[in-house]
Amino acid sequence: MKKTYDVIVIGGGPAGYPAAIRAAQHGLSAACIDDWQNYDGSRSFGGTCLNAGCIPSKAMLESSELVHRAHDEFAAHGINVGKVEVDLAQMQKRKAGIVRQLTGGIEMLLKANKVDGLQGHGRLLPDNEVEYTDPEGKAHKLKARDVIIATGSTPIELPSVPFDGERIVDSWGSLEFTEVPAKLGVIGAGVIGLELGSVWRRLGAEVTVLEALDSFLPMADKAVAREAQKQFKKQGLDIRLGAKVSAAEVGDTGLTLSYTDAQGEQSLEVDRVIVCVGRRPYTEGLCGEGVALAMDKRGFIEVDEHCRTALDRVWAVGDCVRGPMLAHKATEEGVMVADLIAGEVAEVNYDVIPSVIYTAPEIAWVGRTEQQLADSGVEFKVGQVPFGPNGRAKAMEQAAGFVRILADKASDEILGVHIIGPMAGELIAEAVLAMEYQASAEDLQRTVHAHPTLAEVLHEAALATDGKAIHALNK
Ligand code: FAD
Ligand code: AMP
Image (cartoon, rainbow, N blue to C red; front, side):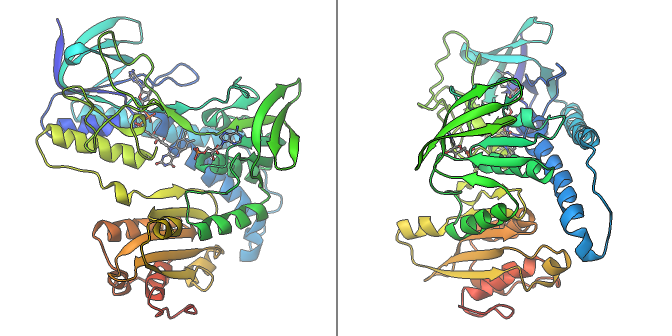
């Protein structure tokens, strides 16, 4: 007998599980099929985000940042801790515990919402039938009125530096290191490369980041990218731009990376290398015979702005479709689709999706950069205020960086907010909300901010767009 659902979601990451839960909240019968497998063969919901991405990386970033503070900042507070020793096994255990609690929480939420959480592989067949293969290899035929594909993404492999799981690893592999490599190479200075490079640098590795592009963080506002490069250099991250890696030779004790830069052929000896050159959509084994799901040339499933594919009542959300590969973007799409299936009006505001890099200082932005505004001929004003004179930042001993607000010169609407500094990832939420409501700089100026808080810098930056900052010089 074929089991029938209103909605079947294929993929249980941050795009898939919220879609299934929201569908169930609408009173629809829903199943969420997820094929995630951990290194030890165990299974857990939550996809890349919870098992191998956002969550374990942030756990390690937090721990390693504490090591850095204990080492370099505690003395300034008058706290002498002597020699700081790292117990990496305990650090990894804590991280694994957080992952276990959160993935277990998803399983519980699926159950509580009466979603059938099915661990195993899902394959889309014609007429919205889905073949579900359970962990024992037994295939089951299911059918749904609507199918949501949320199969996510996987790391891109460099053919010249193939993963071996030992010396050449992807981001997940690097989160599982059981010892701190003395010399670590990172290929790619994107968000993931910088975060993971920071983790291992703070834990004592000598880290060299090789980046093919000549510019640093080209997607960020130029002023922020410049400040970030300066801060990372101070922390001892050796970031080499214009360095295109072409080969790796693995030896008994380490490996040699070959790369070309403006000076010609170069090489770098490291113990291990993390390849962080981006991710690609994952759709392997997804479509059964007779299912012609349109994909673009990079392998993303083609969808419209409401995540509809060309197939009737088949939707696709998250990393396997166009747009930024971010967990919160994935979730918003999954929830939007479930709402649309239930007959509600729903959309995702793609213009106001925040980006965060969890380095120290943190980097966060929303909206357009100065480069983008200049390229599109928009006239804008700038309010930039440093964290330096902010009382809370000083108390935290974290006063590097600034907030930069770009607002339309004529209408005063906020067009972009760029932050580098303490808790930037938290502070950006206010900017996102302001922009969601199309706030003007004056709206932020007139909003009361508690004192002393880091958010006061955002307030001052809004004032600075009109030359009215009180605690900073208006330029
Ligand atoms: P995924 O999380 O990849 O989930 C897809 C799921 O579908 C997986 O469990 C997969 O096994 C399953 N699946 C695939 N095919 C099938 C099939 N045929 N049948 C059944 N199941 C299937 N984003 C942020 O927003 N903030 C961060 O701080 C952040 N940090 C990151 C750090 C790292 C190291 C990495 C690698 C990524 C990070 N990301 C971050 C990105 C974030 O993890 C992804 O954007 C997010 O996980 C995408 O969600 P998704 O549900 O589309 O895909
Ligand atoms: P992201 O796409 O943000 O995860 O970043 C990946 C980064 O890796 C990009 O900045 C790419 O330019 C960089 N990259 C890709 N291939 C190479 C290579 N062969 N050598 C060095 N850097 C690379």
